[in-house]
Length: 116
Length: 114
Image (tube, one colour):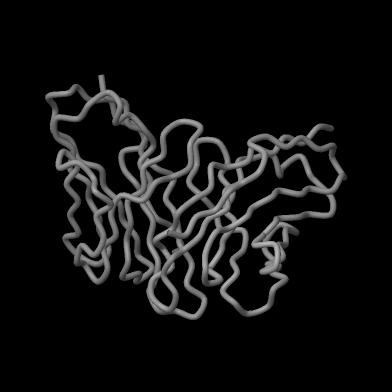
């Protein structure tokens, strides 16, 4: 079964600092991978997704993630944190390739705190 | 319109009540989903409807009964729930098979079972 593991349930950075949120996947076949953000009392918003095209994926709000097969990783980064980035971030995997990508299995989440 | 609308936003019900959660989208998406999210936990898939047919049931107890009356609407009927069913229920939709398929989430219904 495919799954993702997010290392670190809480990450704190200063405003303007690099953001690095870690995600590792377990799958014999490179899966489709996603990063979602959830603000308090809201649904989830897609930041970016990897679907076996370019290994460096650029998303919204200045985020990007790099798929590294050798490390089975899909870490999320942003060069300079902003206060508005404070939220819960979920890495997710879809076992469905070529059909619906909405069947997602999420990591446990990482709460990002940004200090002024 | 790129919204998934869920009603109600908040719901409190007793264990003997029957209630329904509603979800609506007008993006022409033909796949719709129910996810359950307990506090401080990731969302967990419950059901998937594809072209108005139930395609996936993730071993959800029968006290949760989904319904997809048409391509724009998705309901979740609740009966004899337990307090541990209290959670945020998220609806989502997507268009299967699109090269750039994206999952759109609603803001959820916060359910409390007393």
